[in-house]
Image (cartoon, rainbow, N blue to C red; front, side, top):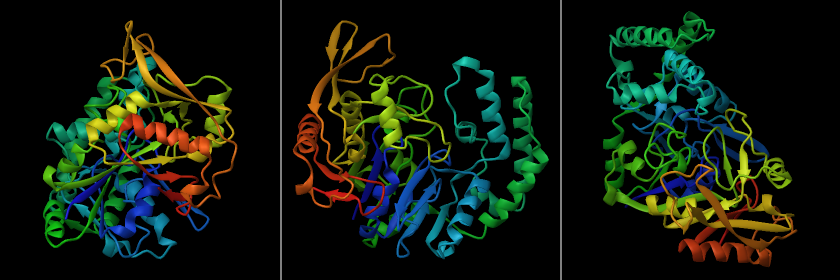
Length: 423
């Protein structure tokens, strides 16, 4: 038995939550392995839209166990808000939602540090979501962090106070004007921690490896996207964790030889939130129409997403780094009605045509080279079989499969879990 992975291959927002929800019935355990509440996974079914931030996307399947792995950073306040949102659906999350003791805790002062750091950068800001993710991972690597397991210790509040005091000194160092009431934030935080402690904390690496030994299938769920990986993304405009396949091993404690299928999720076009290079970005009416039709706004932050044509250079790179075995194409329905579609197949880079992602993809270095396709006008959202898809879309898919040398096994034609076509 192996751990299958589900990963985003672009700059996040690819639709991972929906596909996890679709695939969950094939797995006993859904395990989130990295990231924090800056990532919003959107699921839609029975006419209701759900946005999850930290809780794995299998939570709505009563028969699945949902594990938050050691690679995740958890904000108790946001987590409790998520639990409150689930209460109306009568979910027994106290029995099927479990948390690694090695996961790190986001403190109120982590969020304040995030805001102070970003404000101090002025126009050079990186586009942080200000959720405290970066500072929490900094404390993790700096060996200062507080972990979920610490909450079971009698002296954990002493550890909290020492770290919070250190953070306040750092905030003062930035010398920027951010307004906050730490006492009020701490009251909310400590109340949330007590609620969090009602859930089961586990040694997740032991739990997952024993589950594998007993033959239970596991799906590891990633957050953000591969191009936001701290090592392999468009640094420094990235997140603070490894969003690629290797992050599943370190974020769950499973060995590389236990990895099975790697499902790579990508949009039929490309989007990006926040700052950073984006070679195929559109600044015209086509880009505006993509954003409008695709409802391209952040599930958590509400920030508008930048839109552009599909970038096969970046997608090929992400497939290579992750070892993708199956591709799932999302939001094909959004492209209905565009007369002509474009796909970037190579870059003109410093006078040379290249097909790999170079170190620097800033605008002054890169000119995208496009292949054009005839668009389609059919409404895909009511289609249920691959045979119903228009020829132009099938031509588009066939081209992508040939270029990437990986099968596209799922095509999403709408946000609902039923609007999913297997090929």
